[in-house]
Image (cartoon, rainbow over all chains, first blue to last red; front, top):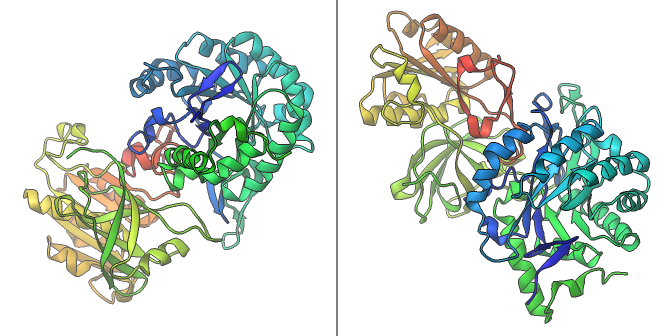
Length: 308
Length: 270
């Protein structure tokens, strides 16, 4: 049976990826998951300079979900390439194609910053693809602002396109009126793929303290509670664009992943579910395989977009 | 035994009410357990519900990896901890463990530099209150096993809220402070006479933040190395999501679940 899928010119061994910010650099999960069993993993948002992120508290648990306001804390692209990539490479087996893919989420406050990160990652051959994050709700400048205006989104994507010659995925924000219009704009600007959705903007209040739970007042909602919204958006986008769509949002089981594939996704990213079960990604791969066997499906691509 | 983390099902062997909101859970696993150090914690699976679906972090109260035994002290403070505290004999609990960095213990080479920078003979004071006493119990039992000298100080608001004092007294000399004087010395843990006359080289504290801050200041005065154990809200427990950070003395963000939860007090920005 074939689980291999293509994202642009990048072949994945299977359609299961991890969502940026929920899987660290992969190595944090290597006691629980054989990273080589995954289609790939998207490592956390990387910026040109180190970022401290937002003050604590950065997290609030919500019904079947959570809000976060981490704010892209990371040590910067130079540190990532020099110190993290070698650790990741010790965990990856690359003897047989296609092997598990290393995808780096690229973030910034200005177009130039995205370009700088992308250019440096282009020179780091271990990085198979980038995911351009124009949808982070937790940074004051840039981030989601790029992802809510089709012209601004296109300008970032065009600039990064020139700096990064390999597979470029663009991660879309759900905090827009028409996500399909955003997808079309970044497709025309040269994206190889779109991933959606990033977190939904939300907030929580501590009624005893009469204060917001998060230091930033608002944050990004993720978890099983967002899945129906994400699924609807993937379905809308997949009908309109020709490039592969990666479904993200509340995926906890193989069944959830299959829903996204049937709605038109070529691959999926598993996010917050990694927190409740650090081994969940590998279970989802096995579950998809078991489903295909049970249904007599010989190629996962047969299921893609069967819900018209 | 390696330091590998694992996801393991445990069976509840005993559920002992310790009065107030506190329950002591005795757990057993047939799986081989890795080395577990005092100050480390577990992430407990709770069934997803409208109240939550993330795991809850609980510090390790006692452990004997060779026989698969683990104890947790649970204070009922929310739906997750209420669920855990209500697990009965024979029921299963799923844990991710062992997580985080623990307390410095001489000869357990976790934080070598602490001892090397300190020339006086090791003598420890363990100060805690409420749930904070859980990891200190495991620490005390390890110090006793290795023959290192230590004293214990237990603080509580009143007699009704005092927990683990008798159990700790079996491990070493234990002083008690209550705010209303209903048992032990009346006053705060920093006012106990134990502080006078003994030169502690190491002070370990776990409990409410104001108490830990006061203990750290007192330890600083006597030039003792002070370690504090934090309990920030966290999601992954693995250093991946960076939700649980605390500010360092230099203003950087430290990840509590992997760089802690035990920190040297003077490295923190509090």
